Length: 87
Image (cartoon, rainbow, N blue to C red):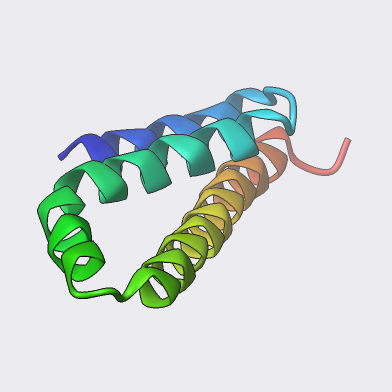
């Protein structure tokens, strides 16, 4: 639920015309939520000696959260552009 709230917040930020630096903040929040949810699995994998896979998973999660934040911000900005019209 918190991840959806982060995505909704960044979409509203794009709609309100907030600065672009909100996108990395939302990406960090999303990847942190992902890490918190899967912390037990990461500990089990670390016990098995799978540190490289853990690192790749965390980097992939950060890239995915950055992409999701950019798309949500872009959709909000597009809605703002459409609501203002061709002035």
